[in-house]
Image 1 (cartoon, rainbow, N blue to C red):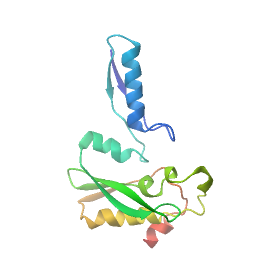
Image 2: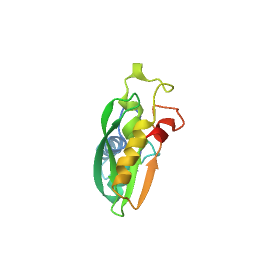
Image 3: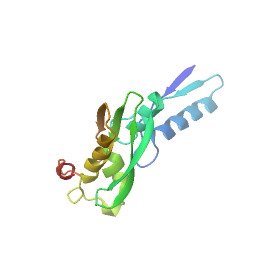
Length: 147
């Protein structure tokens, strides 16, 4: 029997890759003769660039940008082999960057996503794919436009 372990992330618990590994390991251990392929997926939020990297390869780049509350964080983006830059909003302005007590979507800003996009664009990519999801703000892109 062949099992395809293709989960998305379990928010705050496991990344898509870790969830796929756990499912495949459990399936292999539960029954003799089970083969399991791991294929983590994502919905456009955190983990999307990781899933694309796993499938297509590429090169990771980083930039220091503002987090949802304006503090500097190291955020990464992916350059695919065809030259497409993949930028995840969650890398710069994602919920995991904040503690539970800091989560206030009306106070948070999307400015860091704008800064991350500018860093990716500085490399002259052929195209840019912006993955939206897992954001800590509801500012409608006001901060992004400021950047």
